[in-house]
Image 1: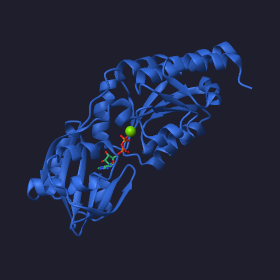
Image 2: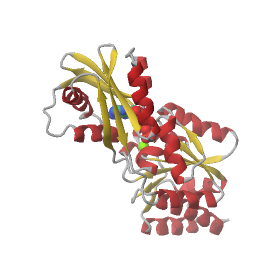
Image 3: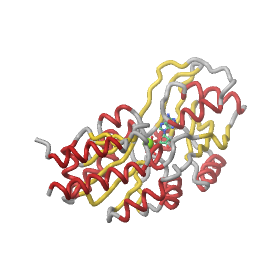
Image 4: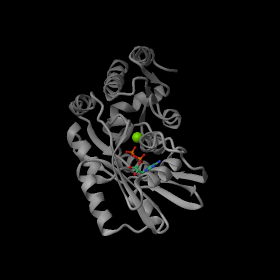
Amino acid sequence: ATPVALMVGTGRAAQMGIIISGPDAIESSARIKTVVLDKTGTVTTGQMSVTSIHTTGAHHDVLRIIAALETHSEHPIAHAIVSKAEGLKLPAVSEFSSVAGQGVTGVVEGVIVFVGTQDWMEQHQLVLSDTQAVQLETARHTGATTVLAGWDGKVQAIVAVADTIKDDSAAAITRINQMGLETILLTGDHEDAAHHIAAQVGISRVIAGATPESKLQVIADIQKRGEAVAMIGDGVNDAAALAQSDLGIAMGTGTDVAIAASDITLIRGTLTAAADALSLSRKTLRIIY
Ligand code: ADP
Ligand code: MG
C-alpha cells in the first residue's frame, strides 16, 4: 500500500501541475545523485527557426524538396523547415521513414532524399565538399543546430536552426545543482551546439551525438555504479532512457511516448517544475522515513 505521506505528496504535486503516475519511483529519489537532461524541448523551447541555408542549387528548389520531406516529421527541426517554406508548393513524398536522432528519408520527385545529421549523410554516402565543411563549422560555432540535406551522392544543403533556451532553465538548473545533484546535458545534437547551451544554463557535463540507444546506455552506465538517476526529457528519442531511469520526468508539452515512459509528467513543461518535483519527492520521503 502507498504510505499516506506519499499520497499527500502526490496530492500537493498535482496542485503544482506535477502528475505522478509511478509513486513507487518517488522512493528511489533519495538515492538519486545525477539528473540527466535532454536539450531540445527540455532545456530549450524546441521552437526552432531557420537562421541560414546554404544550398548548391537554386535556393527555393532545394528548400521545397527538404520541406516536402519534413512535413512528414514531428521533430522541432522539421517544423522550422516547413515554416520557412511557407508559400512554396511542396511536392509529394513517398516511402517516408525516419530514424530518431538521425534524420528522415523519402522519395521526392523520383529522387531519394535524406535530411538529418552529418552522420546520416555519411551513412548514405552523401559527400560533403570542402566549402560545405567550412559552412558547417561556421554555423556550429554560432551555437546553431545544423541539419544537412543530400541526394544524388552529394550534400545539397546546410541548414542552421536556432533554438531558444527557456526563460527559467538556468535558474532551475542552479536549484537542482544546489540540491547536491550532478547535472548532465544529453543530446542527439552536435557537441558545439550542446556546449553552447550547457554553458548558458550552468551544466558542466555534456554528452552529445547520442542516439536513443546511447541515451539509454548512459542511464544504464550510471546505474551500474549503484546510483539512482533521474532523466528529464520530451522526445521519442528520450523514451527508452526515461523508462530505464529510476525517476523519469517528462515534459507535458512533449511527445506521448515520452510521457508514457515516465513516472512524472510536468504539465507546465518547465525545468522549474522539474526542480519542484525533485525537491518535493525528496521532502515527501523525509516525511515517510
Ligand atoms: P535532442 O536529443 O537534442 O532532442 P534529437 O535526438 O531529436 O535531439 O536530434 C538529433 C539530431 O538528429 C538533430 O540535431 C538533427 O540533426 C537530426 N534530426 C533528427 N530528426 C530530424 C528531422 N526530422 N529532420 C532533420 N534532422 C533531424
Ligand atoms: Mg528533446
